[in-house]
Image 1 (cartoon, helix red, strand yellow):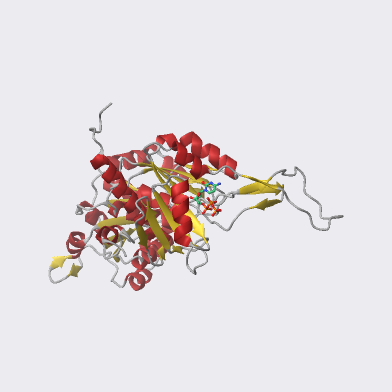
Image 2 (cartoon, helix red, strand yellow; image 1 turned 90 degrees about the vertical axis):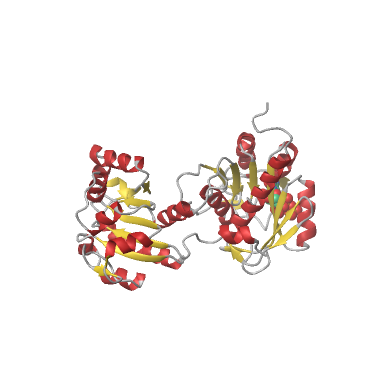
Length: 423
Ligand code: CTP
C-alpha cells in the first residue's frame, strides 16, 4: 500500500497542472506538438499561445486539436466574459513553457518588449517560465544571445539549453531544441519539492559484460531501467547523484548526473570503491555477473574442429558485500532478483551483506524485473518490516524507495546525540 507521503510524491507532477505552452517561429515548432502531447498524457491542462511567425511553421488547428482548447494569438481577444484573454490565462497558469524559443523572443523578453500576446503574457506572469531555445549554432553562441540568456537566468527564468547535433540550416553544433524527454523532465523538476537537497547518492545500474573472447560474452537481461529511474528521481528531488552504469542503450533525460561507464564487474567494483566514500547513500540496482571466464581469449575461438567446449568460470568480487563491510554510517540499499522464495532469499542477502534496505523482486512475474518499464517489489528493512508494492512504473518504485531512504536518514539524524556541526 502507498502511504500519504508516497501519494504526494509519486507519479507525474504535471497531473492537474495548468500550463501555457508558448510556441515561437522556428523550424523546431513542429516538435512543440510532441511536447504538448507528452504534457497532456501526463495529465496537464495545456493552453497554447503562438506568435504570428510560429503559425507559418505549424497551424493552430494542430495545437487546438491536441490541447482541446482554442489557440491564442490575438492580443485583444476576450475570454471568460469581459476579461482580457492573456490576463485570465496568466492568472490561472502554474507554469509557462516557451518551446521553441527563438533568439528574437529571448531578446524581446530580456529587454522588456511586450509587443504581442506571448511577450505580454510572459511579462504578466508571476509563476515559473521555462525557455527551450532553438536556433542556428552561431546565433546561439553570439554575445548578444548569450548576454540575454544570462540576463534572463539572473531574473530567475528557467532554461533547457539546446542540444548538439545536426541543425536544420545544415550546420553542426549546439542549437537544436533539447529532446522532448529532457524538456518534460525539466518541467517535472520545476514542480518537484527538493526534499533530498544536500544528500549525496551513488547509484549503480545495468548489467556487466564478461568477455569469453572478442565477440562473445556472459551477461544478463538487465537494461538498467530501474537504476536510471532511481538516479533521475533522486536528482529531481535535489540530491547530488553519481551513476555508475554497465552497458545500456538508455539515455538519461538530464545532463546534470555524471555517469561513469563500465563494462565488467571488476571495473564496476573499482569505480564504486573509488567513489563511495563521498556519498551518504549507495543504491546498488546493478545486475552484476557473479562469474567471469577464467581465461578470456584474445582472439576469436573458432568452432572448427570443436565439438562443444567447456568454459571455466571464476567468481567476481561481490561489490555490495564489500560495501557492507566498509559502509560506516552510510545507508546501503541492495536489490535482490529472485525466482524462488523471494522473501527468505532477500532477507538472507540483507543480513549477509549488512544492508539497511533490500528491494526484492520476483523476476518471473509478468511486469516485474528485467527490461520492463514497470516493477513489482517488496521493500524490506533491517527491522524485518516488509512493504509490498503492486505493479507500478519504475519511476514510482524509485520514488517510494527514496521515500524509505529519506525516512531512515531523518530517523538517524533525530537519534544522533551530537549536533550536526560537532567535530
Ligand atoms: N551484487 C554485487 N556484486 C556481485 C553480485 C551482486 O554488488 N558480484 C549486488 C547487486 O547489485 C544487488 C545484490 O548484490 O544489489 C543482489 O544481487 P543478486 O544477483 O540478486 O544476488 P547475488 O548476491 O548475486 O546472489 P545469488 O546470485 O546467489 O542470488
